[in-house]
Image (cartoon, rainbow, N blue to C red; front, side, top):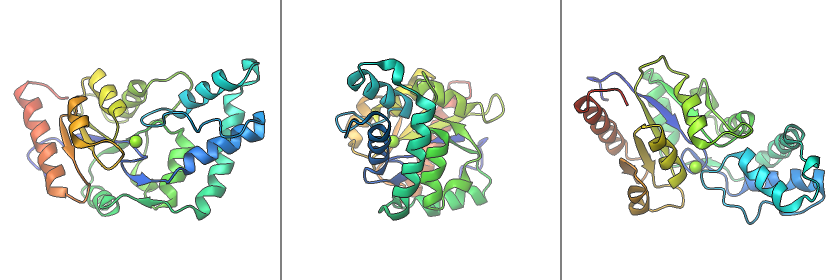
Length: 235
Ligand SMILES: [Mg+2]
């Protein structure tokens, strides 16, 4: 599909866009915090939608730890990854509808793809590996200390040669806002908890209700490429 254009790099969010984890990420974060700081359910009240792992950890530390010097992100995320690995073994985790077939098709076509996710790198690949999707993504942008969502999208974009057009795909207003900060077009996927109208009102260029609808996705990509051609530059 879209053969008359230079193929844009597709920058994919993970949770709520490619797969549904049923709270396993939150459980693993809670267990790690309990193990290191003896406080249970520290992440239960936090808003995960589009957040980075490091931002969530920082919020939990600021809220619960009197001595914030006790925070040690690298130790925390080591424990988190251990817990995530155990939880993922038995979790009811699955790719969202249409995702596996779509990624296989794009991969066979040699389409450039990257991750743009608030997960730490190892967490993203652990989740994707659990459902057989890890090998589709050679790299991307991930949660690092102090990074914003726009920062990680910038890192994802830099996995492609300079000048390569790029499109962000994500399921939350934060994905949309971060893409817009960078001037990147964004296709919102309404498979998370946000409705199409809301995603459009946040600035999504296109909304796809499900990635099972490949025709809709293809026409969205064509439309965005036509628009960028009309405006005289690669998005
Ligand atoms: Mg998401």
